[in-house]
Image (cartoon, rainbow, N blue to C red; front, side, top):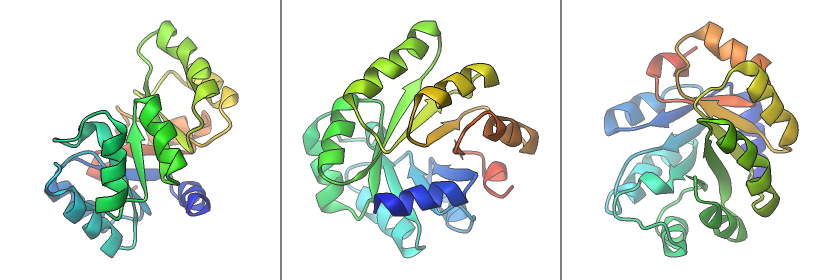
Length: 188
């Protein structure tokens, strides 16, 4: 499975990130082979994931954003046992470690708002071995290139990408791909 994700990331410059049922329906028609699910609750997440899988796309659930799930290992168990999800996104290293042990694809999300957050990335990655990292928001290219150079897994970024020029610029800076909630970006 993890090899399948690596290939999907390599083939896609954009990952569709969905925040509603309406955006989910549109994302199912885009080229992205991976869908980041950023909405839902404990009652409907199995159905949301099922729609993604029926479209023959890989489903990654942002576990921190699913209403009714706590930031505990049992939430990862729920996603694995009660949905067809291929993986999770979280900003919580302990959940990423646990999901990795369960053979789920993992994306560790970092919010880099200042130098302190920037300097913590390398330290956190020494303890957690995610399959990919996601950096938000998009950084000044020189800082983003520094991050890409210190990380050995695919680096996904997102936030504030508004057109093809932005997309090309961040890909040139070293991003493996971009996650976006913008439907316009999905179809570039």
